[in-house]
Image 1: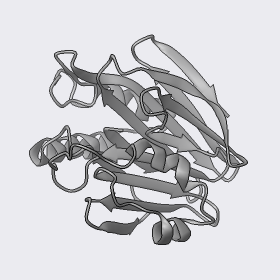
Image 2: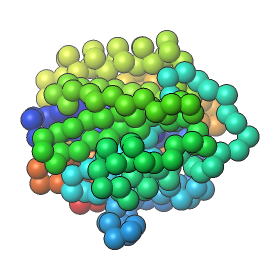
Image 3: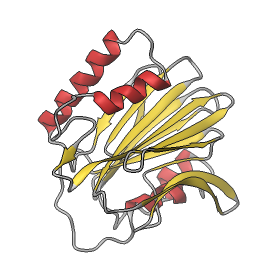
Length: 235
């Protein structure tokens, strides 16, 4: 939700990892399978809005949402629906193009949505909604990418976090699920304000890490609850 990385492992395999930085009192339910409009979807559920920040059909499509667009925005008093419900709605559409062309984004708070599909090779797409316009960008899936939420991190913070990421990736000898997870726990270690494992006086802190590994054989999800120190696997 607040830090996201995409790292290709091969032409068909990738690892998608996100840290959720949130009020620790805002409870999230551990991931499980839900049935929506005939689709089996796997995701941790935000108990307040009943949506999620990361979701997968565990077959060929996974999505992750970060709060905010390009610049920090002024929140409106009322929005039509929670951003976290967008991820559930996505699977009602026949394709990414159908979703982009027909979904009603108006009345939803600013967000960045990253979609990874491997139906015919890996396709990585970034959607940014700034409350006025939807910006669509196809990203090279052969390269690594990292994002930080605009609502929690300034541009200078995001730049430094990106530098941590590139420095780690350049020096890491074996990039795999374990080493990526370690980076998501230790990047910028000791910097509680905007390190990857952050804690701003316990009002906002890193409460969980979710990791999806994708291949031709499907997408597999692991969820690490950092408050209870529990691990859940969804296959």
